[in-house]
Image (cartoon, rainbow, N blue to C red):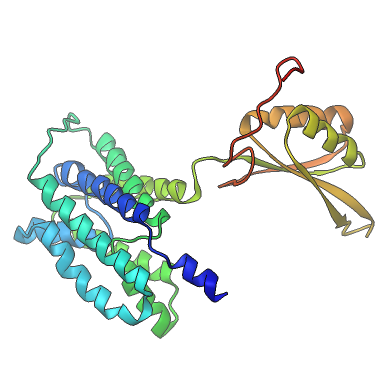
Length: 297
């Protein structure tokens, strides 16, 4: 167990490279889309936009001013690797915020607030998602949420939601209500893209097939689709009879083929299908064996 824990805590060069790319995308969106189009932001980043609008303080500097005390406050709750990653994420984001403001880009959206909101959510979502996926963070409200969870047993999700709501509400001091509505659209896009980045973009389809012809259907799927199958032992809740349930995961383009196989062999089969958020293994994350052409190698 200790060896595994040490392995998971190992810092990798690729992680820091992804943090640089992710924070660069996030900061670019903030500087070139959020700020020019008066779109707010949640969390600590949202506070930096408020202080910029009210007092003219550069978000690059305010990001460090606000985050460093929070990291120090949560120092005892973080592992060494988490602390290093967090400091690097904060520093990287501040650097890019500073740099992009000195390299302005004319990004003409024809004053279309909907497009601005969608792009703002996309840039921040992709950037943050990359950072999160590789175990990093840019600091902010998640530190406060950890403190509340450990000291007062308040769930992290609830604390972060409340803090984001407070920051967005406070943002009304420098943006109007229509701009806030577009900010909420950007926040929704942000959340969806972060989830997509976290869970993986490849969504396969998992089938559970309840049938008395499990062996035939299993063989047909393996022969025709070259997908693996698993036969699970199950007990009927009413009859208490034992039978086998076929489980398989296929590409979305192969769903109709599975349905056709099941319908042909056992039209009375009970079938459930769910979308998987991420699928790892041969045929999905690894190279899939090439199919034969006309039965020839």
